[in-house]
Amino acid sequence: MSMVPERVAVLLMAYGGPNSLDDLPAYLADVRHGRPYSAELLADLTERYRMIGGRSPILELTRAQAEGVQQVLESVQSEDGVRYRVYVGMRHWHPYIREVVPEILRDGADRLVAVVMAPHYSRMSVGAYLARLDEALREHGATLPVHAVESWKDEPDFIAAWVERIEAALAAVPAGERDSVVLLFTAHSLPTRILEWGDPYEEEILTSVRLVAQQFPNHHWRFAFQSQGASEEPWLGPTVEETLDALAAEGVRRVLLVPIGFVCDHVEVLYDVDIAHQQYAAERGIVLERPAMLNDHPLLCRAIATAVRRTLQQARSVTG
Image 1 (cartoon, helix red, strand yellow):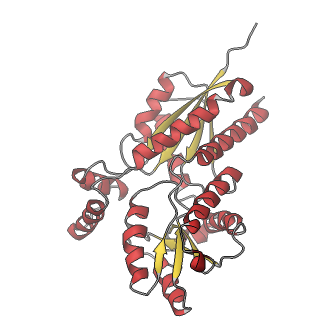
Image 2 (image 1 turned 135 degrees about the vertical axis):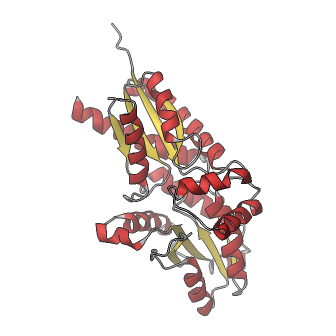
Image 3 (image 1 turned 120 degrees about the horizontal axis):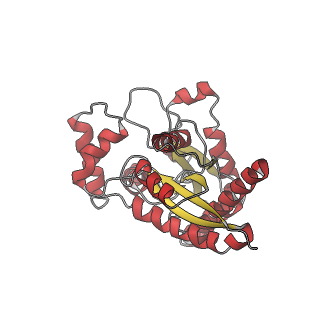
């Protein structure tokens, strides 16, 4: 008698973003956990989103990633003895994680594998997504086992996807200038108080950076934190601006900024990098470009699917 395959839900969780400028007040209130914000902050954010088309593309890009992961998992599910179904939930906008959990439960999942669409673990970032998921499950009295992919920083296909994107970007640089391009890797900054927890975030990022950079031995590289928050507390550095100042002083004239901490186009890339950092670099005589984001690159989808399968296999070996 053939066994009924185990039903495994895979939940991809991303930050979320407004679908229109009208969404911004409610979106900002959610991001700030209901804390008040100034009219200036809303006006600044509104202008940033206006300059990138009036909305965030993060939901459709995450759904495209989910489709890619689903295809990879469907190709191996008979081998794994499971039936996979991939879902998408957002931390700060619709569909919220709490809105997707009831659908997962209605579909009768036996297990849930949770993946945050951020490759590098921090208690403040990845940990916050997992806490939202836990809250939603407890709200529904759900008892299904949950297995978290806490980090996928060194997944070979993730590294290979970035190497491919960087190679394509460098190939577009005039041959005589190619070897002088400095690679500037970036990731989202977090408040420095994470260091008091012994948080691994920076080392997680640098692990990815080193694995990618070693494929480009002819290029110098740097790492900087971008998109520091609006709060008064200190944030991790060095900043991109400080790093560009230093590179300009060294006579560097071409920089390829690689946002390795992000996996798709959204405001921190489309505005912070493509508009603000590019302008800051130009004012210092530096041509700043970036590779295409990974978005739904087949290698990224395969990396996530591999991490899901490994996490599931480890969990099943423990529980038998």
